[in-house]
Image 1 (spheres, rainbow, N blue to C red):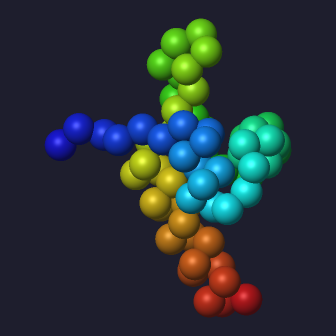
Image 2 (tube, one colour):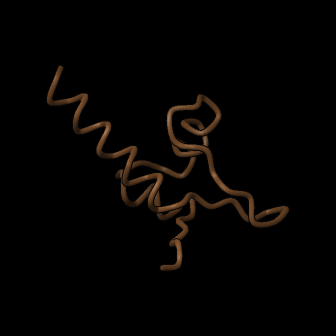
Length: 63
């Protein structure tokens, strides 16, 4: 199965935030590390984002 990669715009839409927020979260280490496919091509593996989301849900259930 081929991995699916998401752009900052994809993540912004998915989380309902701006692209600037996605880049800030990346800088602050709040989201999984991206994959660099080229000099100006940064993507996140969908599998990593799904795991991250499951962690958010688990944390919310405990909190």
